[in-house]
Length: 453
Image 1 (cartoon, one colour):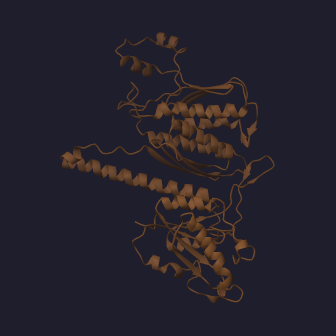
Image 2 (cartoon, rainbow, N blue to C red):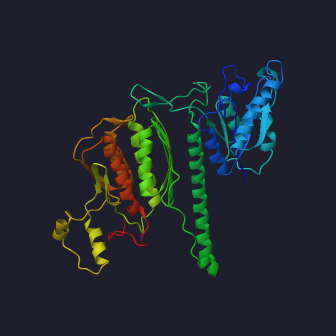
Image 3 (cartoon, helix red, strand yellow):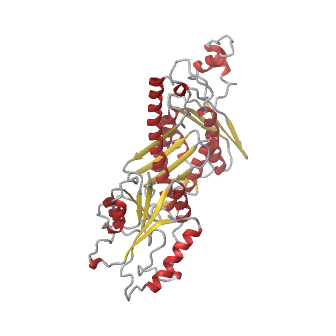
């Protein structure tokens, strides 16, 4: 089914000037990241429709002669970048005209509403005003607010949420916070991918049942194994998080937490672990970054755990990473059942508990997806800085502890003395590199003599 993005123009694609009329080329300024975001969404299969109120268009105060050149410049610029609108719908009336086509009334989109063939569930209305969100509600689709959130910084360089949009603080849409265009693209991508995962899971269940019932040659053929994915939404009074992992897709991650350095560290985990990570966080950064970092860790750990499923066939373990002048180690003492499994597979006699304990000094296992959360940190020296571009280094251990508990991970970490940026980045990279072989499917067996993880 066709998916639509109904998009406002002024304040959404281009900035809205103080006099509310884009009637000169000098007044045209595109919002940051709007073109790459729309290109991404168009590539995801969305059809674009522009829906705009232009008060008094065609009157003496707003003649077509001044509107048309500016409007055509906007459309031509977008088209030059590969963006195409199926329709451009404009209401020229003023509020006092009491017309049927002025947003949030539905006159402009009545033809779409009379067409049952397009996908309401996965279509959106994107704008900057409450009237745009009301329009979305009236159409029965999801409304998203565009804004320049996370662009300001306080005296300490910490990003601050900013919502400069036209919204009633006591109105029905006050809870819908503004998102930048790249964040909107990520949010929609996450939701679309999650819906696809659910559909694929349902189709897979039907295919398996059909194969069992039919028993024919086609049914006996092994179906293509779906990606190990998980979608987690975590909403509290402090944070609102949408996070998706695909353990079998490499690259293409998009991460927006409001903390630039933290974005970079999460990308290090995804890159070095070899999976796709989509994250969108709206946190109370005006209070502190603690809630954002902690809740993101919980969401990430939960998502990886869910994506791993029953953990059958995974490698389970990982290793050590040097970075410039520092050495980061991520390791775990092997459990007796794991050691038994490895030597039994080679036909060797199983060691006693004393022999295993003696080997603990020489056997290094990066981490253990054990189902038994436990963390140990051995940082040979304190971090040499308290923060890195607004990211508090004291949150490093808390992030990994929160992730390990949510994921059911036995985790030991250590880092040597050095540049604080290198210390922190080495730990995140080492964790990713340790996670890579641990989540990789290497067999069909469950890697535990207990029969469960």
